[in-house]
Image: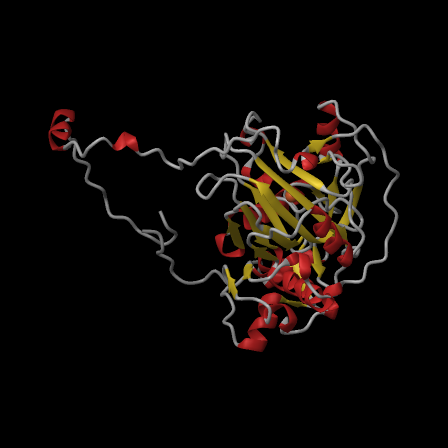
Length: 398
Ligand SMILES: [Fe+2]
């Protein structure tokens, strides 16, 4: 029942089973329709991406040390003109997050276009490109390096080919178990490696092999700019005073239990719960359902309540989310500072194989003078702001 809706008394009529049977007429053989039916591709020894299949080498690395980061988005054109002028089509998925661009080859961008790309990703959270045939893993790394020093993951798979230790492999084989039961849907939402002192910014994921349309395996992103804007001014102010603990411990523990090597010792880092983006100047929530274990300096009951509230906002607010249905060769480029993302399962028996590259960014900070996305866009373009006072009568659900 929707809030505010008053229902009248319901009159229940008992219907005998034999009467129901009499009213149901056969409509043909409906069992010929298999929901979500897709053709499963057979992969043999000549698999095109054999060198990018996963491996978990028994090697170790020292702790990360601080790195200088200069955000290329700051050099981008305010109207993204170098990038947009090369596109054949540009459209947003919704006002808050997600833009798709056609006609642009990520493997052949000028530096001006790369700067615009960074600025656009920072602004829109995630940008999608279809069928990027020329954008192989070497080109993907080269573009990532243009944005900053590449991050090497301490526990997840890397490609079989040597020299790609900074590439993260996502791989689900035809025989892989379905992992849905191992995660709550909320926990599956995350931004990547936020326990690092300098968590990543611009992150690209290319799907090499995957289910065809309708076969599942979509990825979802949730805007943390928009999540911040869903909070009341009072809650925004309160959360701006807090830091959250992001921990790699659980990830490391799971890796060891699988008998794999943790290549770099797990770290635990306190980050501001609200951060400022250096390019857009907008405030965003910096919360991560997958890695935040505690809010610092408040009683556990309160910490748990804040985490539960933010989990709900990030994971269950459709208007701050975008969902992308992949085809092979598609690329998603997101700003890991201002988006959480989530996988979706249920695509067996398709193989799903993707490679991710990301760069280390600035240490998160909050500039108290920075603006929210909604406030800024409202002031500049007259976009109406959400009513947050909770008043009024609601009768929405039908
Ligand atoms: Fe991820």
